[in-house]
Image 1: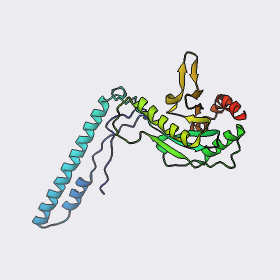
Image 2 (image 1 turned 30 degrees about the horizontal axis):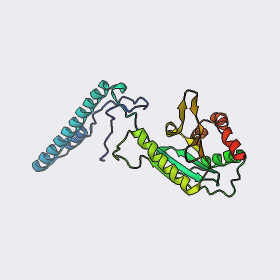
Image 3 (image 1 turned 90 degrees about the vertical axis):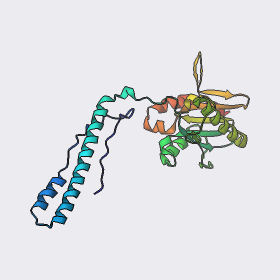
Length: 247
């Protein structure tokens, strides 16, 4: 029927162990020969039939041989032999202008680009209401940003620094247009680009100089939905922002 089996040739990082595939040689060629041998046929037809059967047999033997070789290669490859690029950084974000004082960025799982989630928007509305912000007049249409900007794009700086510069440029452009005083960031992968580290520990709420607005960085909305126990931690991280919005 033209269906070919697929046998993975190496172990993918982080993947669950795959079952071992045992290659079993099918018997349709032998069955066909037995069936054809019981039917009388002319010499020309018999020769053509034998040639066709021989070709199919050769293909079957070759497929079995390749499967056995693949199995042997799989046995020699261990997970620790496969290396991954630790500098690979991919993220997608959605920017929302809430009002004159506040804007929000939510990092969206990179593999879910183009999808929409009512659950995340509902959670965002609930958080804003807890911050005593009226969301009735809010426009939740987003401005999106993806990193990398283009797959395979050559970089002149280190990948993380290039991502930091591109993200900073996007935020600066949005600040110039919307003039927010506070930027609340629900971050996942891009957290490492924004959280400040000092001798006193991580800084998740700080002023951006000389622009004069505040960053508040916490877990992404999707992460909060996946791990509800984060809600208390997130709420604690929003207290400085809550005080500023009150004032």
